[in-house]
Length: 298
Image 1 (cartoon, rainbow, N blue to C red):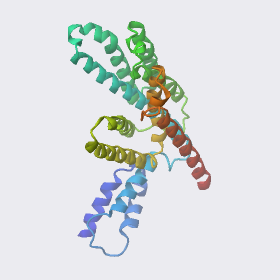
Image 2 (tube, one colour; image 1 turned 180 degrees about the vertical axis):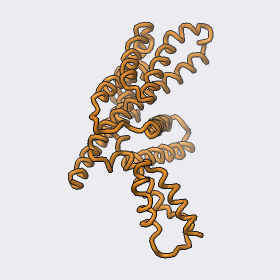
Image 3 (cartoon, helix red, strand yellow; image 1 turned 60 degrees about the vertical axis):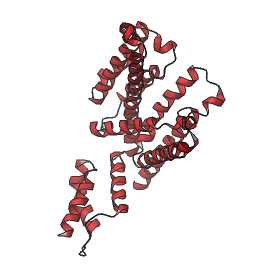
């Protein structure tokens, strides 16, 4: 009886793997995990559970594909376009709500002209990209980079970071149109989860640590370290995240450079040049390590 319960719980963990992989390998994995000896265990060990989840992340990242490096790059580019558009939409929505909260209700048409048009267009481009309508998304993202600025230069003149989102996403989406036929697109549900993970990374209030009192600073620092550690644990397994996070960090760097921030202040910002350099190095490392594994496997 305990073996049946244990098998059910293993199979629940195996649901983290893609369906095709489960159909081919689930029984083999279960036999390996449980073994032939009778057991009284009712739960997988923490180490086994972590290994299964990490293995699922690797499979989603293309480790078992015929061309893992191609999957890493092309799907990483697609996920990067989604992530930077989602971050731009999130920042824009926050600024739009704030504008209405602090005086925007007295002139709502101005707020909608300055920020609302952008919000609608960048959201439409994001929805099209999530839905797999890449050509439609390419048209919409170009329009989102041009039309709102023509209607109102507010975002551009104020150097707001969301203005850069469609600018950065445009080349990524256009390059994505050239994806090789033998490289599958990123599954929609998985792409959404990856995007949410990258957004969660940006919601970690790292720069606010120096603004809280000393007693809370330790707790805040621990939360930042824990959040970054979780992201890195996931991203070093599904290395597409290391590709996808680069344009979102570039968004913050371009915003700060555009506002002519001094070098000293720039280096203290968590989403500025230092983190961008680290992200680029990690992305390059992901490509190199994937190519080495591919050669070893061959």
